[in-house]
Length: 100
Image 1 (cartoon, rainbow, N blue to C red):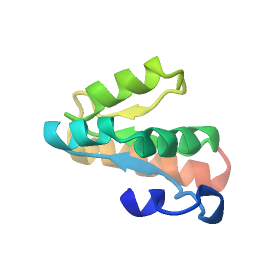
Image 2: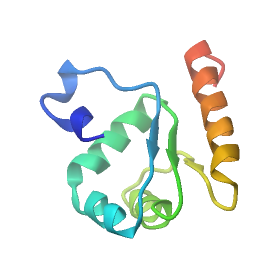
Image 3: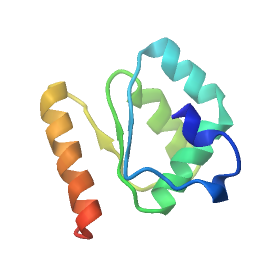
Image 4: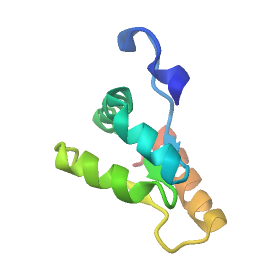
């Protein structure tokens, strides 16, 4: 994630998708970094899938929605990690195939 935010955004391609994972401490650091918010906004604007694993997604998604990012995100919620990953990878493949 950090390597995708270094340098001029116009000079680097966006990844096919973004999966944000981490605990409370990680989430707090990401919340405090405006580059993370801009990067997720770029991903959403490019219609790239953005997913959040527990427990990080609660505060990040809340803050992003307050900032006007209304596109639905892929959230783990109560799913097992493996099940969520299967669904997220399927969404990545749909996006690459132009079906999403």
